[in-house]
Length: 167
Figure 1 (tube, rainbow, N blue to C red):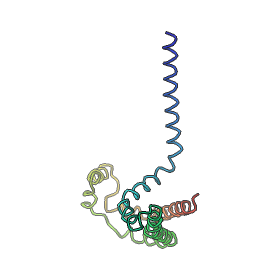
Figure 2: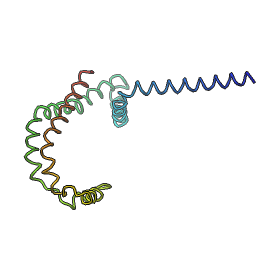
Figure 3: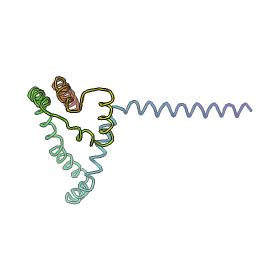
Figure 4: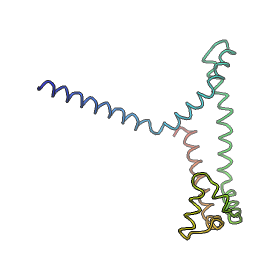
């Protein structure tokens, strides 16, 4: 009986230890999960092209990987960097333009109601709660639009500078 108890304790402690290892591994990898998902998506999508490039380059995998890395750098990273830089440098103009554009826009009842899953419910809740009518939402949101856009651009700039400098 004592041996069965000792084996049960050993198994329970082993399972707890393994679960602790799994949990700590996930906790450590959590900041990198988004990047790993994006990298996996890009690799899966471009794998057939990489195999063709490898065939063109005398079957050398290292040359094909280098060419693909440079190609993806030119196609994805460089334009994205320029786009983020342009948005961040013009955030004040965008925010001011949004503050002038938003109050003049009117949402129509039918447009909001046609939004899948939530549109009809949103219009119904606004009517039941006595909140603003659908066409008043733009003028009520206008004072906040500029600050939200500036905050968002600041976050994008911080993320971009962090990712390009490898934090």
